[in-house]
Picture (cartoon, rainbow, N blue to C red):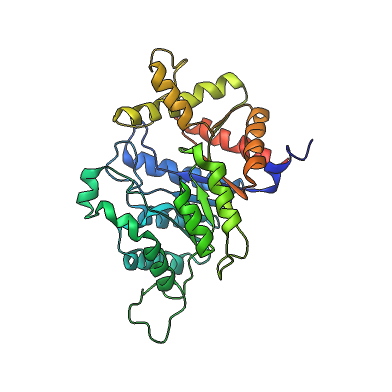
Amino acid sequence: MSSNESLLSQISLSMLDLVPIRAGHSVADAIHDSVAVARHVEQLGFTRFWLAEHHNIEGIASSATAVLIGHIAEKTQHIRVGSGGIMLPNHPPLVIAEQFGTLATMYPNRIDLGLGRAPGTDQTTMRALHRRPEDAADFPQQVQQLQQLLGPRQDDQKLKAIPGTDTNVPIWLLGSSLFSAQLAAQLGLPYAFASHFAPRMLLEAVELYKSNFRPSAQLAEPYVIIGAPVVVADTEQEAKYLATSGQQKILSLFRGEDISLVPPVDSMEGHWLPHEQHGVEQFLAAAAIGTPQQVAHKLNSLLAQTGANEIMVISDIYDQAARHHSLSLLADLAKD
């Protein structure tokens, strides 16, 4: 085994979940599925299980992100549970500090707070959230206010998060462009790049983050998570078959349709037009799909290029037994 091939065994594995609603199933089923997969990856030794904030999207049930984090944390034992992420401009920092301070009090040393600045929804929903497009410009100040609210109490501090003060919930910055990479470096925070859906600027963002990183009270050295859609199966044919559920989901996203997770199909031919196929493939360029050996090759290549400390996988597999088996095969790769 070459040094490149061994990288996967040297990093942490984690999972990002959007609580996907499967076609023919209910929201309650989706939450049940997420609890089951969180328990499964905890047993497999995954480091963290994150949930993402989205609103008004047919097919995703993770809108009340903090509530779901508490539910998952209650149903598991030791895996870190957090947000990947909370879209901070949608919320007053005080409210997020109180929510995550409460979670950290209930589940000590298990809660992560990943932050993004995108709305996670459409213009109509932004207005319903009382969010203005210009609110994203205040993101750096909002992050710093949140750090103060979750940090040690200051003598002259008038605004306090109760619970929240001195819980020191670890803050992560998430992004798919260079803005969050630069801010994470400036504030000395760990950084997660959304290469699971926006891989184009991955290498540039990671390099910018690492080269400009300033040590902080939270973090002495740069720490990078990269996202990757992963489908592992016993055969390449089976993996490609299972992966068509995720491809159909992204195709529906592009078309503005319901993105509930649908059963796989034998072939995507006839389901998409050439330009749609190109768009989906670009969207999923960081995906690792295939046998354990093929997936290991792809993920090790990503690690060699980025020097990432952790891979956060996305598993859009319709059949839950196949989903669990895929994650088990992935965990085995990390042990080799």
